[in-house]
Image (cartoon, rainbow, N blue to C red; front, side, top):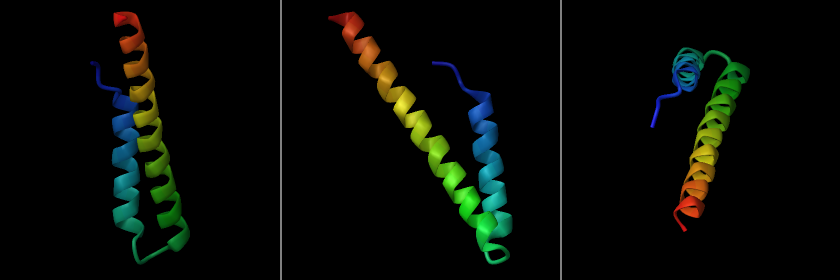
Length: 59
């Protein structure tokens, strides 16, 4: 399994943005949380689809 470095970079940026924006700007905090959640959900969905394909190839 290869590492998607673009995904890792985006997640790191969202986490840094979240750390900096907490208590300062609610809109920026909400954007960081939403972006982080969407990236993680996208990763989990892709992994689920990959597992489905792998299982169908084995049968």
